[in-house]
Length: 245
View 1: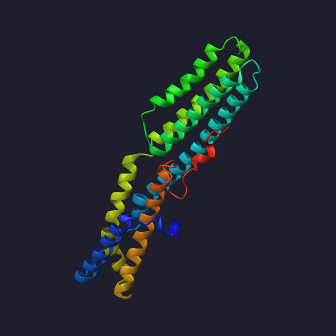
View 2: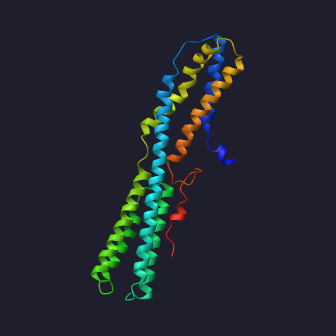
View 3: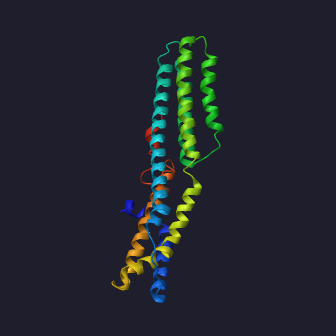
């Protein structure tokens, strides 16, 4: 039942209230005009579809970067663990550093926290560990580790960029404003098309259903906008990309 109620919120109630009020006033004062509803599809449907597709692409890109992050972390871990020159104590130290990187990234993404000083510190600790153990880690191995560390860096930066920068805010605001105005524009045109050939409740019903569909699509896009916050049904399950060893 939760998946059906997820798209219903205060915006839904507000739009339905506007729709009912407008329908009552339009019927009561017999306000109607001939209006080409194709304009509505251009003003609302097209921007809605664009933002939904953009949010979906962001989610797919986020999955790709998180998968690369986890793969890079695992390769780093295996590379350090297979180094026989490192003592067990040092292997534990570097494993804990990798775990801290993973925990920090998951925290920042889920909490939408832009202060990444601790994450940078944990990443630097891996670099410093390689630099400080040149006797145990050969130059060729160190170059490979730096390459894997670079892949982790790139994946982290991409994931954070997706979390920080969203689909155009102005376009989403434009869609929402037009959805609120939609019943005011649509209901008189609907009454004109009926021309008293349908009961009053038909005007109410069609106006409310159409508004409900539009605001539900907007809410779906809004839920997908942040794929990391663990609140929407389609959010990325971040725990699955957490490095564990």
